[in-house]
Length: 480
Ligand code: NAP
Image (cartoon, rainbow, N blue to C red):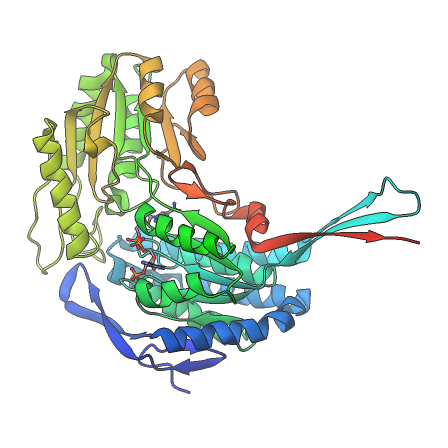
């Protein structure tokens, strides 16, 4: 069965969709990355049925064979890092080193979970009743629906699919419509690695069709979603109404606090990387730079100088620091927030202009606002672009208060040379992840990832904590 042009993968077969979508390169609008299948409701239904049918056999699949399969996927991803990194950067617009780095991350995730297959343990506990043993074990959830965003089109699918399969679940995977190419390549690798028919299914298409089908179908036991708060809230309400297990990773408005005693160079690098790399299109981006009075002016001056030296250009060009915005709709959102910040009284200290390059693309100069306050919408709502604002704080106490003054709670950073403030911040930052003298973005693949408040809902992703979501606990009582 042909896999071209980029069909869906259902019940072990590559099948054409009801229609196709065109995947466009945001660095060069004349470059068509490819055409990808769009499923309708009936095809989503077939994938769910296939996963349901395959789930029992996959749950009982030998652990050695399952570990070997995940290992093969990881090895293949790592071996093809350059080719797949290029595809990723071409469809999403992050720079080539960022694209290759994301593929490496995906490969390492599969290798990590290959090991986890063999490390699954339970507890044997003495009962309070004489002669009875109690065994606590973990079992797969059954069928897991995976709904992913466009900004990490291979790493996020990997960190959901790998644990789902490792812990014995059948998967129906719906990638983001905007960047399906990397997700399709990952699905092809999983299929070629020999996953049994139906245990893994790829269904590309609209969230309102395929996503909804997964969320509403009682045959799907659990939904792992990453995306915006708005979509997440809608999905959560529907999934909970039918008692599905959910894991929601959503937006951020992550603070980077810079204290008077910070190493200025470290603080500027953390801000540039955290706020602007990957075009600011990261849920962990440091969009709020909270700076104390004694370093404020020096920090703004040094950061502005650093921004002037950045190259914004085609994602695949050597030397590009920041690629284009992903599409016209995201660009419109970024420009809307730049205008809004101005109208709220923020001072545009640098950037914010559209840029022309050799190829037509969505090029936007990074924008830095100063003289902003916590109450402004620019500091409360996620922009998801290369836009950051500076908030002046009197001292550490006010900086901590401002850092926590947000409906989100994903990642929170501080730059300081004081052990006292670093320790206090680590304990009191209301976020799932805290960074000291590091960018708020950029996390390891083998430890928990997730946030608090409006950023996350449900068990953590990644590392051994992934078992909380992808398994259900059984307590067995064994009498004599
Ligand atoms: P999005 O618009 O919420 O879409 C996310 C996914 O949900 C897409 O696959 C989308 O399908 C699907 N979807 C849309 N409507 C749906 C519905 N009614 N039912 C089921 N599924 C539906 O988010 P995005 O623009 O792709 O991604 C950007 C957002 O993701 C940002 O807010 C960012 O902060 C967040 N994010 C969070 C994390 C984290 O771990 N916390 C990581 C990365 C990104 P389509 O293909 O049709 O769009």
